[in-house]
Length: 381
Image (cartoon, rainbow, N blue to C red; front, side, top):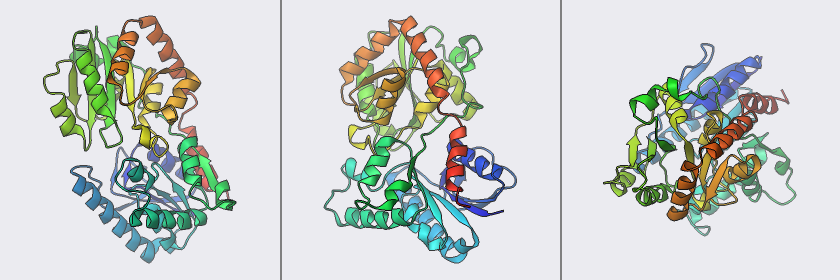
């Protein structure tokens, strides 16, 4: 029995599935995390670190640095006690610290840093911090046993940082996100408490649910709501929180066809997701290669069509093209977005067909991918 250490500052359902797969492999599992959404198996040992806080921006940076400091000290002192490490890019500096354990490690990259910061205009290619971070990434990637990314675009972006001809290019594996079918599943309208209590039974509901962050062009969705004010049967819901929420609420002031809701617990979130007619996925064109929206796969599991605000090269855009589960518009085009919403709202049979295709596509993104990831990580044990 090997001793495994899994590191992720904020653990959600995806990583809980990875933990479960690691336990099922017959090994002893320890996690280092700041917070865990949901319950952990009793046999998992939890080493508590700093809890991630997204707002304000200063708290986000402080909690990232706090956890990174705790992680670095822990790996220096006790990292050698574990046989294998799986390190998530949360916080962003965690992968760079993996070597301090002096044990084999694999990386799971949810976002590519510093690429995201560059793509959003926070760091230039010529900035000393960007160059140093990129050099450290190269050194870290070359020493990793395996590097898991979420999409083909992320893998290509990542491999551009590796030396030409480097054998580390063979270590990059693509494992897309998945949905949790025990938590996310279609709820019929007559049994949907959220839909009934919110008075949405005869409404075309456009739902955005998730982080309202810097890479999400949600200003376009609010402008689309202004174009749709004369369509009373269309309601837009924005569920979640993040750095942009306050500014978005100010931008949406006076709009009666748009409502903001906080993050919802799993049972209520599933009801909310099932109340949607279409689910919006939003990603800035600049960040298309460096990020993947995991909420996409929950929408598919709920049998919901996608309305993607992203560039054609984004993974979600490719998914829409591959499986025929929705429409795509440019992330800055509010008129095209409003037109797409009106088109969908006027064609219930079309929406039904898209929903059926979404459920079929969801069969390709199940927790079995967590088992595949763990098996690949531990194959040399």
